[in-house]
Image: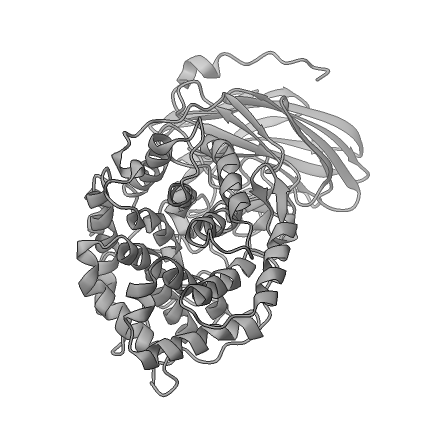
Length: 589
């Protein structure tokens, strides 16, 4: 059984309100007796089960708070449950009290939405509580001002809480707020872009920095302690870049961590609408199309349990790709999309006709360290990246350091390094020092470039091997050129896009491809390889499809210097015609 959300047309404000109810209603029977905890599954996370249950409870508020602010008719019975949960969860004498927090505590993350509640719906969210509950909520949230947290997007959580305190007339530390705003400013990289810790450029720019900033800009415009005007202007600058990440189905390119948040990918456009940050290329109609169209696309995938609860995974339930901080309730971060329900029915966002944005065929985005290439019909967006580094979270080499990421074929994550099947090395060159027993893909790197022609990077999988890789982009084709200097014999495997395991791969001495209902994925030798083959990875390694095939080239390299060159194609609509039209490129490029 799928959630009723799966059949929602998602075109109007009424549809969006109904979608929020459709997502929340299956959760109501899973609330604890005191309504302060939400038990959604048995899988574990880095934090304890009781904190995970508090997280699940809190993330629903990202939808309920805008529904309160927008006076949605259907919010009352749901809010009654969550209001009870807030009263009990913040009461130190109640058995479901959320507890005293520590440094770097997950509950600090969940406090952000309570700050937003006070900020955008103070009467309904705060002043309607009993006076004792108001005091309890204030004291519980004020713990965020006495504890340390990562110096990244988390800092915005404290900003939201303190701006909420300001809105409801409660004391807050002005100097702490000033220091937090300054730290956020140190993460600003220009042209609307922020970076997260480890210098990552990923969706945390869009669904964190660029979500909270516009909320603050709109709801605390009278506060001279924050750069409200700058937050709104950065949203305008970001919008035109970020629109290029979405294909004609409004599906965005999966890249980086926390992808279990799924349609939170388009939450940026909800924040943009809330702040009124309209641009020439991304106006009301475009942001409405990207937000609702993305949600419509997600509604077609099997992402729910039989009783209608969101799962951990991407296009399907998948724990293999998860991070250690993904608890059963974590996917409900996607409720941020419902911020637009705070806008009244006569708001320009809801009155606008959906309009697909006009995006260039090639978009060079230096702050993201990406070049995005778009199929002529918009059916496929490819993101070629170079320069992002490994972070502490799982599968970082798969989530950040493939040569290319695709809105159609996604990417795969390793189950182990012991074999091509368990490695699932799509869109990357893997190198083995021990005759194919152990394989390592690109990780780390230096001397990277991103320009209008493609990307480049120097990297080393292990001592004794140095590789300079240049990717030359030509529409849905791209050319990979590697200069390999190795002081020991190595085996190499060059993977194309992982594609649904449907149909029979076509293989000859120089190439391999598979064409089916998902599209076409293929790879052709130009020089330096020995063999073309179709690798069958282990199930559940790819984000888009549970069973895939990876067109692959292999070779064994004696010690020395070698040049490897191949042409790689991934297409939805080009088919055999495009496969038989290999692009000509400047060999000296």
